[in-house]
View 1 (cartoon, helix red, strand yellow):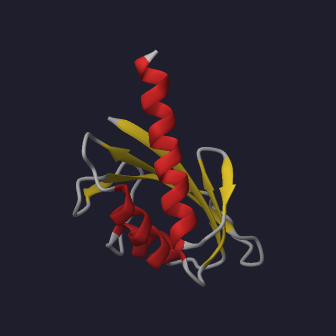
View 2 (cartoon, one colour; view 1 turned 90 degrees about the horizontal axis):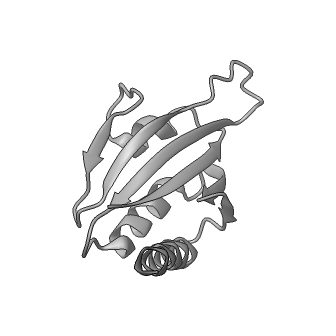
Length: 117
C-alpha cells in the first residue's frame, strides 16, 4: 500500500465534509473510492478567525493497480474554485486536473523505485 499525504488550504468551511461525503467528519474516518483508493481524513486546523484559511489533511492509499487518474479527477472536482493551495507530499501543486494526476503518478512511481532498491 502506498500513501500520498494531501494538505489543502481553503476558506470554504464545508470542504472537508464534501471531500469525505458526509456532514459529520472525524479524524481517522475513511472511505473507499471507485477505482480502489482509500481516502482517510487526518484532521484540520481549528481556526476560529474566518479570515484565516483552514488546512485540511488527508491521506490517500493506493494498492496495486489502483487508478490514480480517477482519484486525481475526484480531488480536482472537489477543489476547483474552493481551495487556495494543494500540497502533495510536501510539494505545492497547482489545482489543475492534469497537474494533480501527474504529481500522483510521479509520486507513486518514485515510491516504486524506492522500494525496488
